[in-house]
Image (cartoon, rainbow, N blue to C red; front, side, top):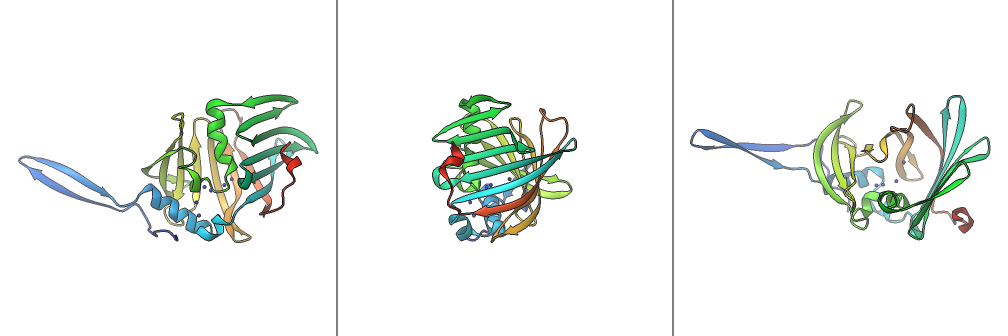
Length: 241
Protein backbone atom coordinates (compact mmCIF):
# COMPACT_ATOMS: atom_id res chain seq x y z
CA UNK A 1 0.00 0.00 0.00
CA UNK A 2 3.53 1.91 3.47
CA UNK A 3 5.34 6.75 3.37
CA UNK A 4 7.18 9.56 8.36
CA UNK A 5 4.36 5.48 4.34
CA UNK A 6 4.53 10.12 10.59
CA UNK A 7 6.11 17.02 15.39
CA UNK A 8 2.50 17.40 14.23
CA UNK A 9 2.46 18.86 10.79
CA UNK A 10 2.36 22.36 9.55
CA UNK A 11 -1.25 22.34 8.48
CA UNK A 12 -2.23 23.99 5.27
CA UNK A 13 -4.79 23.60 2.56
CA UNK A 14 -4.22 24.21 -1.09
CA UNK A 15 -1.15 25.29 -2.94
CA UNK A 16 -1.07 28.98 -2.08
CA UNK A 17 1.10 31.22 -4.11
CA UNK A 18 1.84 34.90 -3.73
CA UNK A 19 3.07 36.77 -6.79
CA UNK A 20 3.93 40.31 -7.70
CA UNK A 21 4.98 42.13 -10.84
CA UNK A 22 8.15 44.15 -11.01
CA UNK A 23 8.28 46.75 -13.75
CA UNK A 24 11.64 47.44 -15.33
CA UNK A 25 11.22 49.75 -18.30
CA UNK A 26 8.71 48.11 -20.62
CA UNK A 27 9.14 44.56 -19.22
CA UNK A 28 7.39 42.86 -16.34
CA UNK A 29 9.12 40.10 -14.42
CA UNK A 30 6.78 37.76 -12.56
CA UNK A 31 8.23 36.68 -9.24
CA UNK A 32 6.48 33.88 -7.39
CA UNK A 33 6.94 32.80 -3.82
CA UNK A 34 6.15 29.13 -3.21
CA UNK A 35 4.46 28.74 0.15
CA UNK A 36 4.21 24.92 0.11
CA UNK A 37 7.31 22.74 0.45
CA UNK A 38 7.86 19.02 -0.03
CA UNK A 39 8.65 18.68 3.67
CA UNK A 40 5.32 20.28 4.62
CA UNK A 41 3.43 17.87 2.35
CA UNK A 42 5.14 14.91 4.04
CA UNK A 43 4.46 16.29 7.51
CA UNK A 44 0.79 16.76 6.71
CA UNK A 45 0.66 13.17 5.46
CA UNK A 46 2.25 11.91 8.70
CA UNK A 47 -0.34 13.81 10.72
CA UNK A 48 -3.15 12.45 8.53
CA UNK A 49 -2.23 8.79 9.00
CA UNK A 50 -2.05 9.06 12.78
CA UNK A 51 0.76 11.33 13.88
CA UNK A 52 4.46 11.12 14.62
CA UNK A 53 4.13 9.00 17.79
CA UNK A 54 2.04 6.34 16.05
CA UNK A 55 4.50 6.04 13.18
CA UNK A 56 7.57 6.02 15.43
CA UNK A 57 6.17 2.99 17.27
CA UNK A 58 5.66 0.86 14.15
CA UNK A 59 7.93 -2.20 14.05
CA UNK A 60 6.23 -4.39 11.49
CA UNK A 61 3.02 -4.70 9.52
CA UNK A 62 1.20 -7.59 7.87
CA UNK A 63 -1.59 -7.17 5.31
CA UNK A 64 -3.72 -9.82 3.68
CA UNK A 65 -5.45 -8.73 0.47
CA UNK A 66 -7.77 -10.25 -2.12
CA UNK A 67 -8.03 -9.56 -5.83
CA UNK A 68 -10.25 -10.93 -8.61
CA UNK A 69 -8.68 -11.63 -12.02
CA UNK A 70 -10.73 -13.19 -14.81
CA UNK A 71 -12.96 -14.96 -12.32
CA UNK A 72 -10.07 -16.23 -10.21
CA UNK A 73 -9.28 -15.07 -6.67
CA UNK A 74 -5.77 -14.10 -5.70
CA UNK A 75 -4.64 -13.95 -2.08
CA UNK A 76 -1.79 -11.52 -1.45
CA UNK A 77 0.15 -11.43 1.81
CA UNK A 78 2.49 -8.51 2.42
CA UNK A 79 4.78 -8.47 5.46
CA UNK A 80 6.94 -5.42 6.14
CA UNK A 81 9.49 -6.05 8.89
CA UNK A 82 10.85 -2.54 9.28
CA UNK A 83 12.69 -3.46 12.46
CA UNK A 84 14.91 -5.94 10.59
CA UNK A 85 14.81 -4.37 7.11
CA UNK A 86 12.92 -7.27 5.54
CA UNK A 87 9.90 -7.46 3.24
CA UNK A 88 7.80 -10.32 1.87
CA UNK A 89 5.16 -10.24 -0.86
CA UNK A 90 3.46 -13.61 -1.43
CA UNK A 91 0.72 -14.21 -4.01
CA UNK A 92 -1.32 -17.42 -3.99
CA UNK A 93 -4.19 -18.86 -5.99
CA UNK A 94 -6.25 -21.75 -4.66
CA UNK A 95 -3.62 -22.28 -1.99
CA UNK A 96 -0.79 -22.55 -4.51
CA UNK A 97 2.06 -20.06 -4.70
CA UNK A 98 1.98 -17.93 -7.84
CA UNK A 99 4.72 -15.44 -7.04
CA UNK A 100 6.97 -14.44 -4.15
CA UNK A 101 9.20 -11.42 -3.67
CA UNK A 102 11.62 -11.35 -0.75
CA UNK A 103 13.99 -8.60 0.38
CA UNK A 104 16.36 -9.20 3.30
CA UNK A 105 20.01 -8.67 4.22
CA UNK A 106 20.29 -6.08 1.47
CA UNK A 107 19.41 -8.64 -1.21
CA UNK A 108 16.28 -9.44 -3.17
CA UNK A 109 14.77 -12.41 -4.98
CA UNK A 110 11.65 -13.07 -7.05
CA UNK A 111 10.16 -16.54 -7.43
CA UNK A 112 7.58 -16.91 -10.19
CA UNK A 113 6.21 -20.09 -11.79
CA UNK A 114 8.91 -22.06 -9.99
CA UNK A 115 11.71 -19.93 -11.40
CA UNK A 116 13.93 -17.92 -9.03
CA UNK A 117 15.57 -14.69 -10.11
CA UNK A 118 17.83 -12.39 -8.10
CA UNK A 119 16.85 -8.73 -7.84
CA UNK A 120 19.84 -6.44 -8.17
CA UNK A 121 21.05 -3.04 -9.27
CA UNK A 122 18.58 -0.32 -10.11
CA UNK A 123 15.54 -2.49 -9.48
CA UNK A 124 16.67 -3.55 -6.00
CA UNK A 125 17.49 0.03 -5.00
CA UNK A 126 14.04 1.13 -6.12
CA UNK A 127 12.39 -1.65 -4.08
CA UNK A 128 14.22 -1.05 -0.79
CA UNK A 129 11.46 1.37 0.27
CA UNK A 130 9.25 -1.73 0.68
CA UNK A 131 11.13 -2.55 3.88
CA UNK A 132 9.59 0.57 5.48
CA UNK A 133 5.96 0.85 6.54
CA UNK A 134 5.83 4.61 5.97
CA UNK A 135 8.74 5.19 3.57
CA UNK A 136 8.24 8.98 3.64
CA UNK A 137 9.98 8.91 7.02
CA UNK A 138 13.08 7.38 5.46
CA UNK A 139 13.61 9.08 2.12
CA UNK A 140 16.92 10.57 3.27
CA UNK A 141 18.18 7.16 4.45
CA UNK A 142 17.15 5.69 1.09
CA UNK A 143 19.15 8.34 -0.74
CA UNK A 144 16.13 9.91 -2.43
CA UNK A 145 16.08 13.48 -3.65
CA UNK A 146 12.66 14.98 -2.97
CA UNK A 147 11.18 18.15 -4.43
CA UNK A 148 7.78 19.80 -4.73
CA UNK A 149 6.38 19.49 -8.25
CA UNK A 150 3.22 21.60 -8.14
CA UNK A 151 -0.36 20.37 -8.06
CA UNK A 152 -2.46 18.00 -10.11
CA UNK A 153 -5.63 15.94 -9.84
CA UNK A 154 -6.34 12.33 -8.98
CA UNK A 155 -9.86 11.30 -9.93
CA UNK A 156 -11.09 14.87 -9.53
CA UNK A 157 -9.33 15.52 -6.21
CA UNK A 158 -6.68 18.24 -6.07
CA UNK A 159 -3.27 16.94 -5.04
CA UNK A 160 0.21 18.14 -4.19
CA UNK A 161 2.86 16.32 -6.26
CA UNK A 162 6.23 15.28 -4.88
CA UNK A 163 8.99 14.27 -7.27
CA UNK A 164 11.34 11.59 -5.94
CA UNK A 165 14.61 10.65 -7.57
CA UNK A 166 16.62 7.70 -6.29
CA UNK A 167 20.39 7.12 -6.50
CA UNK A 168 19.94 5.75 -10.04
CA UNK A 169 17.93 8.79 -11.17
CA UNK A 170 14.74 6.70 -11.34
CA UNK A 171 11.86 9.14 -10.89
CA UNK A 172 8.61 8.59 -9.00
CA UNK A 173 5.75 11.05 -8.55
CA UNK A 174 3.61 10.85 -5.45
CA UNK A 175 0.26 12.62 -5.15
CA UNK A 176 -1.11 13.77 -1.77
CA UNK A 177 -4.57 15.21 -1.20
CA UNK A 178 -4.54 18.97 -0.66
CA UNK A 179 -7.58 18.61 1.60
CA UNK A 180 -6.84 15.56 3.74
CA UNK A 181 -3.07 15.15 3.33
CA UNK A 182 -3.43 11.44 2.53
CA UNK A 183 -1.55 9.79 -0.33
CA UNK A 184 -3.74 9.33 -3.40
CA UNK A 185 -1.43 7.88 -6.02
CA UNK A 186 2.11 6.80 -6.88
CA UNK A 187 3.31 6.88 -10.48
CA UNK A 188 6.59 5.78 -12.08
CA UNK A 189 7.89 4.23 -15.29
CA UNK A 190 9.25 1.27 -13.35
CA UNK A 191 6.17 0.33 -11.32
CA UNK A 192 3.35 1.98 -13.25
CA UNK A 193 0.45 3.59 -11.40
CA UNK A 194 -0.87 2.74 -7.93
CA UNK A 195 -4.04 4.45 -6.64
CA UNK A 196 -4.90 4.41 -2.92
CA UNK A 197 -8.55 4.65 -1.85
CA UNK A 198 -11.03 4.02 0.96
CA UNK A 199 -8.79 4.91 3.87
CA UNK A 200 -9.81 3.46 7.23
CA UNK A 201 -8.57 3.30 10.81
CA UNK A 202 -6.55 0.14 11.42
CA UNK A 203 -5.72 0.01 15.13
CA UNK A 204 -4.90 3.71 15.25
CA UNK A 205 -3.20 4.14 11.89
CA UNK A 206 -5.05 5.37 8.80
CA UNK A 207 -4.24 3.32 5.70
CA UNK A 208 -6.06 2.51 2.44
CA UNK A 209 -8.34 -0.52 2.22
CA UNK A 210 -8.43 -0.50 -1.59
CA UNK A 211 -5.43 -0.30 -3.93
CA UNK A 212 -5.64 -0.28 -7.72
CA UNK A 213 -2.53 -1.11 -9.72
CA UNK A 214 -1.87 -0.71 -13.43
CA UNK A 215 1.20 -0.92 -15.63
CA UNK A 216 2.29 -1.90 -19.12
CA UNK A 217 2.67 -5.55 -18.12
CA UNK A 218 -0.96 -5.90 -17.02
CA UNK A 219 -3.82 -6.26 -19.53
CA UNK A 220 -6.11 -4.30 -17.22
CA UNK A 221 -5.92 -2.53 -13.83
CA UNK A 222 -6.03 -4.84 -10.81
CA UNK A 223 -8.10 -3.83 -7.77
CA UNK A 224 -6.86 -5.20 -4.47
CA UNK A 225 -8.90 -5.06 -1.26
CA UNK A 226 -7.35 -5.31 2.20
CA UNK A 227 -9.15 -7.89 4.34
CA UNK A 228 -6.89 -7.79 7.40
CA UNK A 229 -4.05 -5.70 8.77
CA UNK A 230 -1.98 -6.40 11.88
CA UNK A 231 0.93 -4.50 13.38
CA UNK A 232 3.83 -5.07 15.75
CA UNK A 233 3.62 -8.88 15.87
CA UNK A 234 6.28 -11.37 16.85
CA UNK A 235 7.28 -12.51 13.36
CA UNK A 236 8.56 -15.99 12.61
CA UNK A 237 11.95 -15.85 10.87
CA UNK A 238 10.82 -18.75 8.65
CA UNK A 239 8.48 -16.33 6.87
CA UNK A 240 11.55 -14.82 5.21
CA UNK A 241 13.22 -18.06 4.09
